[in-house]
Length: 431
Image 1 (cartoon, rainbow, N blue to C red):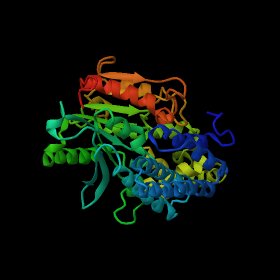
Image 2: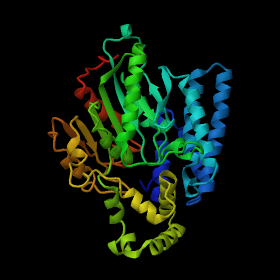
Image 3: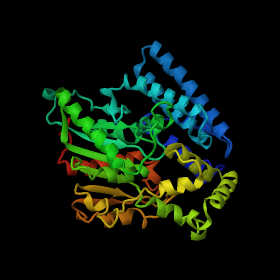
Image 4: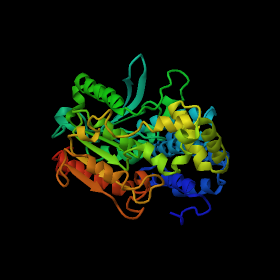
């Protein structure tokens, strides 16, 4: 990946490719990307914010011009790009979690995206998913093109539920998941859960990241079932629900797949034990248990001053989890694992539905042995080759980077070919 924007560190290059990789799905224009990239300085979150904000403002004006000219295709494409640029703009500002521009940028990203959905060639519904104590989670239901009335389709519509991960927003999931689903005859539900997107940033009813994501998925599935009952004309097939997530979302998807209503799960480059991953990046004598919180916090504070990626990771974790110190972040994230509790069965032991497990050869974070292979071995109820498939591509053009960034076309082909087989869908059957 060094050939791409070689003036930047791997962390910055990855995030730049994350934006560029959405170009096939109208989330980016190559020249706009190149122009913004030239204005960015290494380890400078302000220049990053200004570059992508300028790109967004330019494209927002283009979208409005297209609307006034009756060019709905041009407006849709521009609104999608503007949404993605707004998402990108606040990303590096996570080193300053209290910066009000974080929420303001995501609100604009959502507004642009909703304008784009009005111009899509397939229906989109906005969702408010109840989540206890009066809270709600924002979501979208993307329906396939070609009519959703029951009489207009040969079969009921299978559903993909896409969960985000550590730092994504649901509008970004359109490019990596929902757009590929809707054009292949699938409905797709996206949402933002606790600790994600606007849910982590809103001042009222802020919800924090949690390791027991099965609780979140239960609420989402409950809402999908209610929606299918209340709107039978949507023709949703609740007997064929696939759950998908990437990176931390891959961990979340495996947690959620313990729900018997999930018919298939796709875990994209997820981890088995986040605590083990963090521990592998520092000697045991530097852990908080060995040093004590005070010294650990001092050392991590120093590390954040000279290493931007470390600073971003810990500050974003504080934003998502509500932790106030590095030691608290460490303890919070160590709770994210697939092991069983108190000698009970592991999370993976409880998964009975078919599973597609992918791995990343060129990840910034965890090894294949400690993530993908460990997950595959833990799926003891599934038989490899029949109930579980492993996909570990070679080369970042084929999907070797984390979360298949930059290779969504390859990813969509692999995922939906597998899912069509699991759901026994032949070409064109679901539309």
